Length: 261
Length: 236
Image 1 (cartoon, chains in turn brown, green):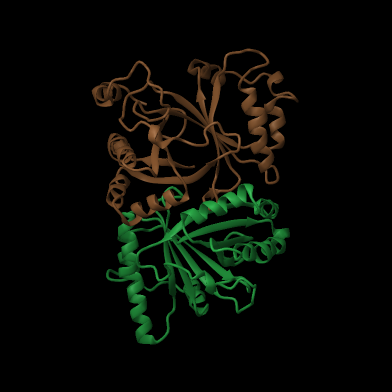
Image 2 (tube, each protein chain N blue to C red; image 1 turned 90 degrees about the vertical axis):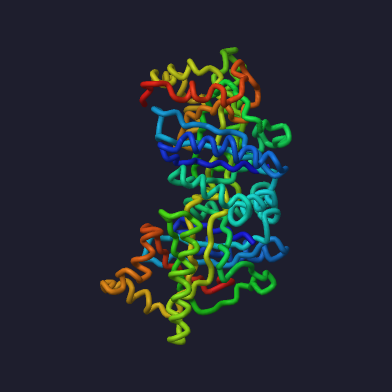
């Protein structure tokens, strides 16, 4: 399975049109076939980094399905819709990702992915992208699964979990950078973000023997994005309290008077 | 057919080793089946851009073949090869491209692509990558209408072509930036480039009705790379 990761530079005036295009056109069009499904539609939280950035992740069955999709967009039935989408964004940067050997998300049963736009409670993700040192790429991939992912489970202390890795990915041949790893991490307790943002990491958490220390032999550059799912985003699939159709709550939730970032 | 375009930032001290890995391993290994072929191995000319940059373009039969090559690189028989290549480069940036509808190169007959490292004269290419302000489709069409067709007409009149557009590509969905296209241009006479570099463009060549002026309706940002084929590059 392939995962198309796209970072969209959205035209601010058109953010609602942009989102509607994905919700009302891209998601259902993909839902008509067996080749691909939109999984995540995520807003980069204002105040945490760039403005008006949206990340989408689309699962594609295999290389042949990806080529079919690419050709539909280049010269087929999706050429005009994609051209319309381009009027709602400045540009988009994409990369084709494949799951790491240890990734919890490796395959998706495409038929089970919702395409109805049902509303769900927003979920916040921390998307971490890392660039391992030149000769440590394979080591980092292995350690991120064996050491980092395990450490998040807090088996040793029994402490409540903060992050859960839902997927780990690397770019496929011929797409983007080679030496890059991306982790899609769901924040299980958003309130604990405050501590992460406002507290120094204590020395004992970056001493030899900790991931913060030992992983410096593998990489020291990464970038974190705080991404919030749109209410109708197909993933995550569980339906919370907000399970009414998107359209009925969209206006009230998205246009609070006086809300300025 | 898919075209995998890679820009390698080579470790200067290992440039020969890097080149040998492509010539002696990547090219012949791909030749063992029908999925892909190394097409071009190009050195970015020193003095015209970043140092120690190499551009390779690999032709891949289709999406299924591309996935097989990707799996071989990550977990199969090409894993050791790519690790050796990684040791010779700082990194690599890549994209998968599709020929646009008017591109002279649409497909490559793999059986005709040399894989034995035979040597030839070095050839100079100008790779132009543009980022339109117009729609991508209009930009791609304009390249044919107001750039390529006049060049072909000029070549007919003069019986010589200054810039031979061999291919035009756009990025496959999800592989890189969307609003981008690339011209792959052979320069038969390198003096053309020297003249371009050392001479101001006269005002009449950038007045309304000229390509330089009219193309501003579609873009004003592009980047040219001057690339020289290796002596053994399969295509040149």
